[in-house]
Image (cartoon, rainbow, N blue to C red; front, side, top):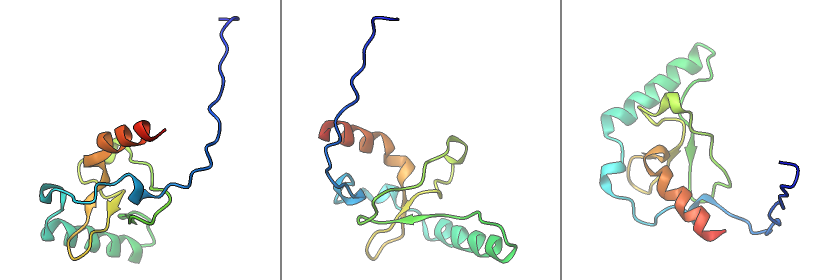
Length: 107
């Protein structure tokens, strides 16, 4: 191991927004139902009233970052919800692998 060297990549100084890596058209199957969206909103309101910070987080194509997606919350995907125009949101976790592939291809 003593002979191993590693060169950190240079900072490319390329500003990246979420919209740079999201698909422009998202398959309807990823959009959450009205019932689930209403449930997320009601749960966030209840938690806020109790003084708890738990709830969903919204991001859009102008966002410079998203929250980290925890493995334990994969079921409802409410940690990172992507806003769509005139539609319910969709959870980022369903598209994470595609996004990672796009990012790696860009670098």
